[in-house]
Amino acid sequence: MSSQFSEDYLIVAAIDFGTSYSGYAYSTRHDFKRNPTEVSANRLLSGNYQSLKTPTCILFDSEKKFDSFGYQAQSKYADLASDGSKGYKKWYFFQRFKMKLYKTQKFKNFMISDENGKEMLALDVFSSSISYLKNDMLEHCKNQLTGIGENDIRWVITVPAIWSEAAKSFMRKAAEKCVCGTVDITVHQVEEDGKIKELKISAGNKWGGTKVDKAFFSFLESQIGGHSLKKYKREETCDFVELYQDFELKKRQLNESINLRIPSSLRSLISQSTTKSKFTLKFWKKSGSENKFNNDSVTLKNDKLKLKSEVVYGFFEKSVAEICKLLGDILKATKADYILMVGGYSESKILQDAVKHAFSSNSRIIIPREASLSVLKGAVILGHDPTIIRERICKNTYGVVCSTRFVDGIHPNEYKFWKDGMWCCGYIFQKQVTVGQTVVVGEYQTEDILTKFSDSEDLSIAIYLSPNEDPKYVTDQGCSKIGVLNLKVKDGRHLGNSKIKIEMSFSGTEIQAKATCMATGAVAVVYLDHPP
Image 1 (tube, rainbow, N blue to C red):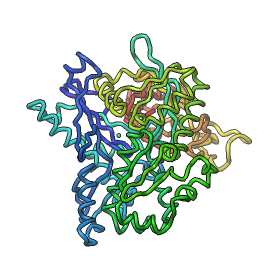
Image 2 (spheres, helix red, strand yellow):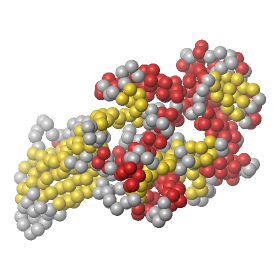
Image 3 (cartoon, rainbow, N blue to C red):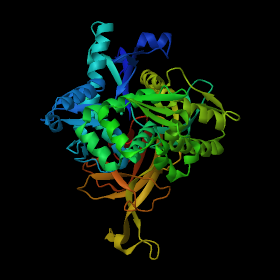
Image 4 (cartoon, rainbow, N blue to C red):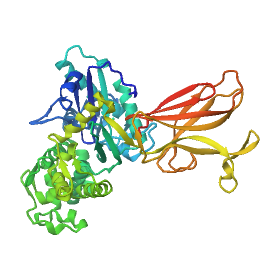
C-alpha cells in the first residue's frame, strides 16, 4: 500500500474489519465519476436476518488451518459443540479479537487466545480474516463484472483512528500478507472545494457495542455466578453461541422490551439461583440503580427471558455516558457545528437518543441511512481520491537522532563522547514535526542537519517518534525507532562538514522520509509504516 497509487485500476474495494462485524464494499471508476456515494456491498444471510456485515469471528481446525469466518464460523462451531463429543475443543474459535491489538504494544510473535484459551499467532488470525473477506469480495465482484482480476483492484482497509502506530503497522502487515486495516471520534472541516481538513487528533476508547455485551453477560453472571457461567460456556457451547447471537440481534432492534430465548440448560441454572423478586437486584445494586426496576422488569417464563427497556438501557448506560462525556469535551474545544454518527454502534437508537438529547441544541446531528455502511463508503471514496484529505493532525512527534556540542550542566554525562577534537552529546532528538501540528498531505516538512564525514563512511540516520511534544533525547520514555535512512555519499572526495537536508512527507497511510547530501546530491528515501 504505497503512497504512489497506480492509476491503472478499475475498482476500489474497501474492507471494514470491525470489532463486532466486518464487511466490504466496492465501486468502479465509472460508478465513482457518476455518483461517488454509490457503492456495492454483499448482503449476508443468517437465518431470517440479512446484514451487510458478518460477525468478526473465525474458526480454524485442530491443525490451525482456516475453516470459516463470520456466520459460517459461528454455525460450524455450534454444530461441532452440539455433537456430544469433546473434539470441538481442539478447534480454534476466535471472536471479537480485534481489540486485543488495543491492549498491547509488542507485536512481534504476538499470540492471542481463542474461546477455550488455546493460542495462535495473531498475525495468522488477522491475515486469514482479511484474506476471507478479500476472496469473498473477489467472488462477488466477478459475478457482477466479468474479466476482473486482483491487479484491477485498489484495496483500502479501515482501522480505528485511535489505534497506536504499532497496531496500525501490525494491521498493515496482516493486510500485505494476503492482499498484494470501536468508538473513535475526530473533528474535520469541509473546505469550499470539498476537500477535508482534520482539526483535532482522534480520540476514543473501548466504549462501543462490546461494552453492552459485557454488561449483559455480567448480568447473567450475577444471577448464576461467574464460575457457573464459565462452566456453562465451556460445556454448553452450542447453547451459549445461540444466546449470544440472539442478544446481538435483539439489542439492535430495541423497542419497549426484548425477549430472549433461553436454552433449557441455562434456564435450570437461573431457576436454581434466583427468584423473580430479586432477579435484577444483585447486578444493579453495585451502581445504586436498583430502584429503577420493578419486580417485573425481568421475567423468565418457559424458554423466554423478557427484559424491559429500562433493564436493556442499563446495559448501555456506561458506554453511552462515556461517549457523551468525550463528545462534550471535544465540542467545548472545537465548537463543531455537526456531529456525524457512523459505524455499527451508531445504529443503536439508545445511543442516537442520548447524543440528540445532549447535543442537538448546539450541534446538528447527522445519522446516515445504514450508518454501518458509511465507513465503507468513505473508505471507497478515499480509495478513488486519496487527495480528498488535505490536512492532517500529527498524532506523534517525529524526528531524527543527531549529536551536538556537549554543554556542562545541560547535557547528561552518560551521553558525552569525544569526536573530531571536541566533546559531543549524542542521542539528541531533533524534531521534524510536533504532535498536534497540522501538516498538508504530500507536502514535505524540511529540516537541515550538519554532519562531518570521514573519508570512508556512508551515513545512517535513524528516525524516531515520540508521543510527547518536546522530547530531548531518543532514549526518553515513549520514544521508538521507526526507520533508518542509509545515505551513500562516498564519491572519492573529502567532504568534511556537509549539510544534510531531511524531509518528511505525510500521506494517509504512511510517511516518506528523505535525506539529501547537499554536497554530492546523494539521496536516500524510506517509507515508514506509521501514519501521522
